[in-house]
Length: 74
Image 1 (cartoon, rainbow, N blue to C red):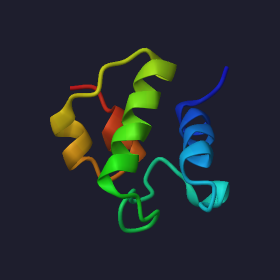
Image 2: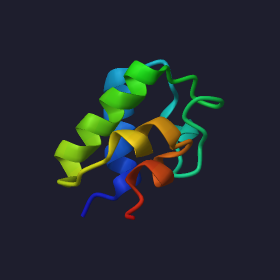
Image 3: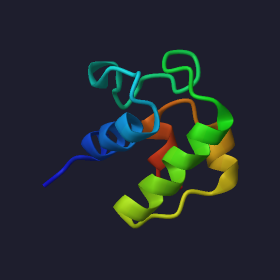
């Protein structure tokens, strides 16, 4: 079974191939550490929704600093 972080790594590798996979953890700061802009963050969330069959509210996407926060359940 593929873990959430592995799914996120695969997605981010497609969206931002310049980011080293080793840099991506559940607690890596999406903006400060990975330099993701808002559009890429939304693209990541959209693809995570499809891959994990979850819904991520826009408010969470805007506020989430990490992958863990992005996929956290309410």
